[in-house]
Length: 489
Image (cartoon, rainbow, N blue to C red; front, side, top):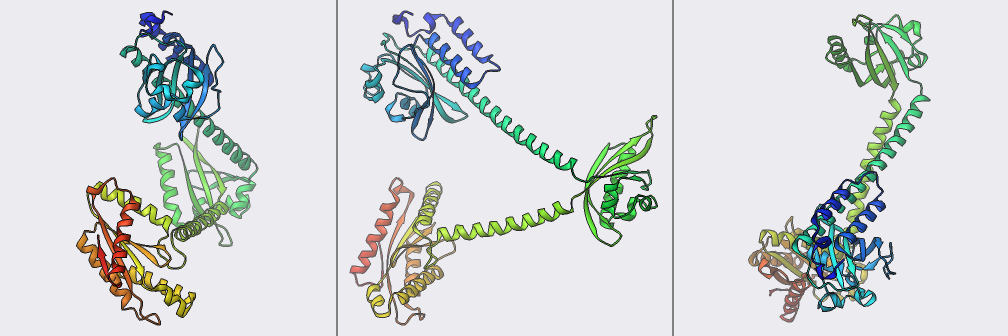
C-alpha cells in the first residue's frame, strides 16, 4: 500500500472496506479465536498496518488475546503488561478511537515504554466495549510512519470494527453462559430423571366421579391401602379436607376443556391417620370419540422433600442470623461496641457521598478521655476497659439515632453526625461531654474534651483524613484550654 495515502481506507476503496466489514458481520459458527483472527486480518488489510492486536483490559493490565504480525514482537499472547506502558492506555482514557501517524513526533505516545521496545511509528487504537464497559482494545501498528493523519471516516470505521467486535465477544460470552446453563440444566435433569426412575411413583386410574379404578403397588404403599381396598373408595375420602376444594375445582376445569392437565401439592390421610404430602399430576384420558373416559394420576411422595425444605429454611434463617452477627463482629470494636476503624471508613464514604449529593453538612466530633493514663494507673487496665465502655455508652445515649460512634484508637472516639450544621453539632458535643462528666457508674468522675468540625459541600475535594484532622485540631485546642470542654474549628 502507498504509505503516502495512509489516511485513506484501502487506498480510498470504501466499497472493499465496507464489504470486508459485511463479511465480518456475517461470520457464523466460528470460535472466538477464529473471530479474532478474521477481525485482525481484515483490519490489517483495510488500514494497511503490519501489526494488529486484540487485547483485554482489566484492573490496570493489558493482556494480548490475539496478535498478528509479520515480524517478531516483544508482546506475547496471554502475557499481561501494565496498561500504562502501552499506547492502549490513551484510547482507554478517552474512551474513543485514537490515531498517531508518527509516534516519534507525538509528545505523549513516544514516552510509553512500548515505543522504546518496538519502534512502531504508526498507531491506531479503539476501545472494545460491552455496553458502557470497556473490556479491551483493538490496536493497529506499523513500523513506518504515515505522512498524513487518518481521516474521520477511517476512524469511524475503526470504531465500528471495535464496536462489532465487542458485540461478537458479548455474544460469545452469552453463548458460553448459555452452554454452561444448558450443561447444568441437563445435569440436573439427568440427576432427577435417574432419581425419579428409581423412586416408587404411584400411578392410578380414577373414574370421572373420583373412584379408584386401578392403583399400582407404589400408590398402594403411599396411601396405605391394598388395590382392592382402594377400589372401594374414591380419592375424595383420602384427601386432606383443606386440599379437596382446589383439587375438585381443577378436575372440573379439565372436564370443561379449560385446561388439559394440572399439578398440585396436596395431602392424603392414611388409615392410621398419618398425613403424607404428595405431588399430584392429573391428565384426562379420552375415548376415541373425544368424550372423557377417566383420569390418570401420578402421585409422588414429597413428604421427605417438604420436611427437608422446612429444615433448609430453618438452617438458612440460622445462617442469616449467624452472618448478621459476624457482620456486626467485623464492624464493631470488641471492647466498647462502637464502630471500628474499618467500619468507620465505609460509613464515612457513604455519608460523604450523601452530603455531596444532597448538599447537606456533615459534622465530625473527636472525643478524648481526659487524664486517662493516671486513671488506668490508679485502678488498673481492667477498670480502664470498663471506663472506656461507659464512655462509649454515654456517647451513644447522648447522640442521635443516625449518628455513628467509632472508637478511633485508645481512649479516643469519633462521632459522625449526618445532616448536622455547626450549632447542632456543638449541642451534641456538649451533651456528650455532660453525659460522661455526670456518669456515676465509675469509681471516680471522668471527663472528656471534644473537638468539632463541620464539613459542607463547598469544601468538596478535601480528603476525609484532613476533615478528621480539623476535628482533632479542635480537640487539642480544648485540651490546651483546660480540658472538659468543647472547641470548634
